[in-house]
Amino acid sequence: MDNLVALYTTTAGRISRKNWWIGVVGIIVASIVLSIILSLVGLNAAWAQLIVYVLLFYPNWCIGLKRRQDRDNNGMDFKILMGLSGLLALVQALGIGVTMTDMGNGVVVPAPDGWLMVLFGLMGIFGIYMLVQLGFLKGTPGPNTYGADPLGFATA
Image 1 (cartoon, helix red, strand yellow):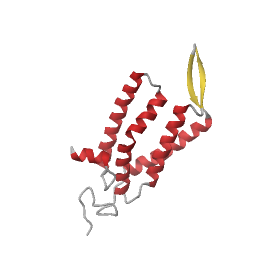
Image 2: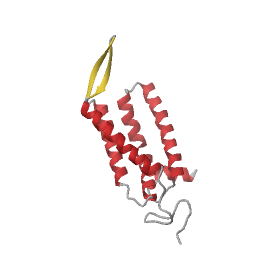
Image 3: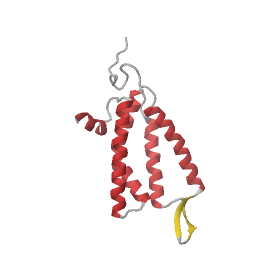
Image 4: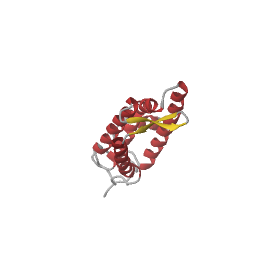
């Protein structure tokens, strides 16, 4: 249990891909539960997404940075992804770049403008890059700048 708490509350050290995936699953479950609760309260989806982002920011920050540190990287690319994700969530919640579109039969839905769609596309590409970095590439074998190998390997 202590390891689980440390996984979500500290940025020091390194974690393996396995521990990162465990952390991601926990964040996804928490995100779904929070989204359901916020929708039951009556919050619209954009504001609910922003609130979930804010509530889960730090645990996500912790697992992402430790995973980047496992690859002997300071995590600046991950920090940029987190900042841009929050900014886009805020833009959506405020309704900037969104036009209400009549779908017929009295159904009106928000539709993102072209520039916002381009930003979402670029963030998607950046997100795939970060998914590969965090979830699929091996860490630095042996100790590195950020600590001992989480898999326990030592270099000769």
